[in-house]
Picture 1: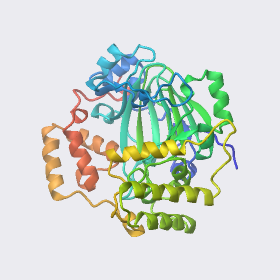
Picture 2 (picture 1 turned 180 degrees about the vertical axis):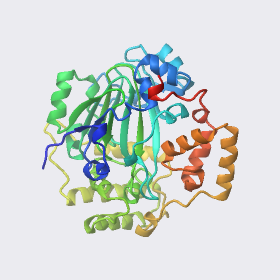
Picture 3 (picture 1 turned 45 degrees about the vertical axis):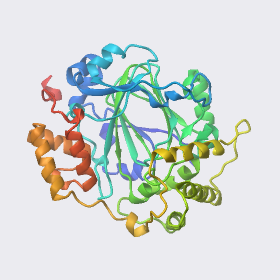
Picture 4 (picture 1 turned 180 degrees about the horizontal axis):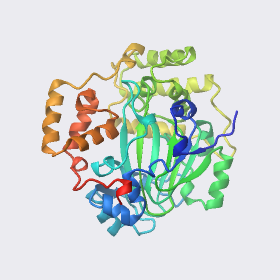
Length: 436
């Protein structure tokens, strides 16, 4: 097996084989200068960011994983209650927190505002190619010495992470690295952020991972279910495009299950199913086993959670996906189970009586209803969107050309967006790169 690595190409090398070479192969890759010719490139410097995006709304908050004590190299839960988030602008964030080293104040997973949506065009490989594909875009801003703790994403979408300003270190690990990362649910309990740079480099190599740095106008493609750690090398802003999830990965995602290293390893190959293609015979057998257990009668959500947890652990073992633990580590399975069962109190997963089938899984979301489209027309008019701005927002936010092309879930999200601060019409259009 080839050594895990992060490939690197230029924007000029992105072609119509990107899905085949990188997405279906689940091969991470840095794309240098992918947004270099877009209006968004003006924001590559702080002065440019203030000119282009200064009045952009942002939600300023403590980074949510800071409830863990990171002064140690393994998880220790904190009793400290985080302060309430505060709505502000990018200018206010930069003035108040941007230059503070290790400030807890960040902008994280913030729905991408129109100020950014109007300033670039999503790459063609991110656009939906089947009715099952959907897009989600979020922004992230933090000062120097901040980080995103080691984790994998439970939604199982492909991710393109683009850097607006500042530089960001990116460490990626395949699911086979899990034993070295001492997993606790979908988090690693190894804290790369407390390591010195050389210690971190050596650990990434030892654990079978890879490390790169992205700069303004660069982006990195991160395949689903890869462990990732992100390091703010200086004051930086980025956004992601979450794309390309097939219906089988959707079924195995957090829409139905809380993830751990066992589900991660079992589900990861499903991300390689081509758009519109059927799962292989082996993958179909896995799905049928999971669906069979999912559809059984259970007395409680906790009983269903325990049964499904065991199904994924048995599949993990039967597929030979369990590498030997490093000698200095011990499993955190019991702690993960205890934590997950507490989390059932704050979600609707594992409900007894909820059933599915392969046919139901493969059924796409229905189109937007006439009532939704009527509400959207009114909301677009109230937001004072012109045709060009509406076209740009629809294309970048959903990969769609018109409101009529939205499905029911997308229409609901678009309506909420138009009624939020993020959906407000920007004051002025950005200048084209050649006009400055």
